[in-house]
Amino acid sequence: MKMSRLRFNFGFLLEADFGTIRRIELDYPSIKLSDDLTLSPLKGVITATRTTEGIYIQGELESAVVLECVRCLTETIVPLNFTLDELFFYPPQSAPPGENRVGEDGMIDLAPLVRELSLLSLPTKVLCREDCLGLCQECGANLNDGDCGCAPDEIDPRLAALQQLLNNERNGG
Ligand SMILES: [Zn+2]
Ligand SMILES: [Zn+2]
Image 1 (cartoon, rainbow, N blue to C red):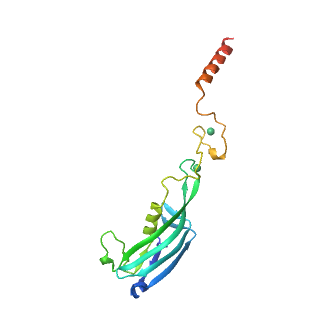
Image 2: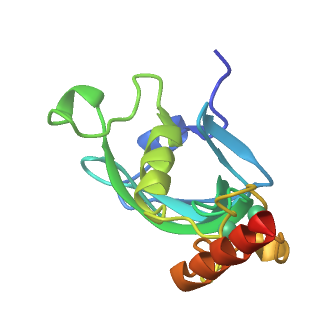
Image 3: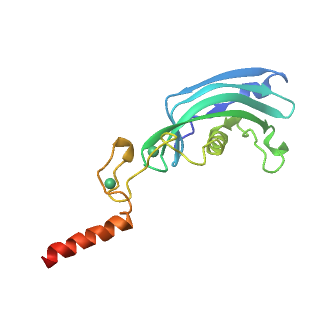
């Protein structure tokens, strides 16, 4: 398995005085967090603070993900912004169940946290634009590209009756 590019060594920070802060700039044109999630880009600054309990990670990250519009299925760039605000306990044994912890080796992998925050900030419904017209029910054409020429959904029943009458006359003649 490929090593996460969001894995950082905080060994030196664990040795430092409480209150020591380290600033880390993230600037990835594209980063794959899991098979189902690639962020393009992922940018921002995080600060890691040595506290009595471990390492406290804070930051504001800007990102975007490409998803299909629910109406027309066009690939759409969805901006994502989220805030990191997490304590990673150290030593790892001191972490309460379910809490984040620094690895024995002083490493923190931010990928699972960034993935979770990304998923939480996704819109429930992705639209390429607010007034997306979607796909034609008949031919599947993208109606945002223009009228596909298919007949309107329903023919007015009165017109249908007239059409029937004309057909009968023509056939009977
Ligand atoms: Zn659309
Ligand atoms: Zn059509």
